[in-house]
Amino acid sequence: MPWLLLIATLPGHNGGLRVRFWRQMKAAGAAILRDGVYLLPQRADLSPALADLEALRTELTAAGGCAYLVQLPRQAAELEREWVELFDRGAAYRECRDALDPLLARLDQWSEAEARRQLRLWQKSLAAIVAIDYFPGEAREQTQRAASEAEASVARHFSPDEPLPRRGAIARRARRDYQGRRWATRRRPWVDRVACAWLIRRFIDHDAQFVWLADVRRCPKRTIGFDFDGATFTHVGNKVTFEVLLHAFSLDRNAALQRLGELVHSLDVGGAPTAEASGFEAVLAGARARIDDDDRLLAEMGGVLDSLYAHFEGSKAAK
Image 1: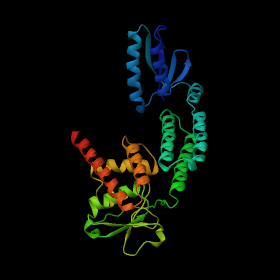
Image 2: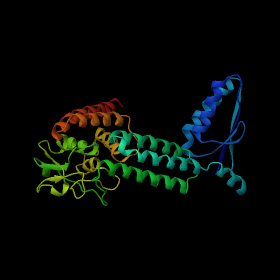
Image 3: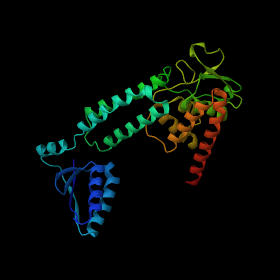
Image 4: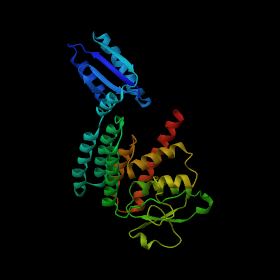
């Protein structure tokens, strides 16, 4: 592949600029060939980093230094191998995996909200490595498998009856067939279940009544189950139950509901966090600590979800 070479001479009197330059090189994942000479593979996904480098090059020049960004063609095979080895992230992935064990060992000491917050912080550190892993291999795959196993461990610890995802397509449903029904899910709802119950009553079945199950094996007949194994609506593939309901009832064309789906997904099974996720999780954790009755809990969190939905609707209109 083609390469980029950044050659820079930094003004010695400007310590702040030197620190920013070093941090920029580290954030871009550049390899150091020698002092002031940095190497990067030329890739399409480097465009944002290159724009930052160009701005920094201009600042260096203005401060009395100099910098050149040079495009290099493919090199001889032996030199290419040497350069590729400079971007080996194996040690970073091992350090990242090692940080999981003490995290999982503290699950008994944390609330569910805190455990999931700690896991998201760890996922953010993993994402930072992935972003500069220009030549991925087995180390990345091993760490991503460890990430999936960690998410499953947290889910099993706090929700032992968390549903396993089904395979297959999600059938479309007609809302007229689901009016005035009883809906059942596991008691003490967390993010996915409380959001699903809100979605059902707000957009699918305005007269819905909810049954909160201590044991899903005793789900009453003629109720519509959601978010447990064997339920009518539950996880399918990589979609959480909220996203399954959106698709099933053709609500996935609603941009504000899609944004809510991203929030629920990130909090329930991990993934890219949304700006509002941690706040919603904190409010839900506090509400569950104060309110023992699940119908009252849904009423309180329903107001929060109404406000988030209005916020997302307003954001869409502003664009």
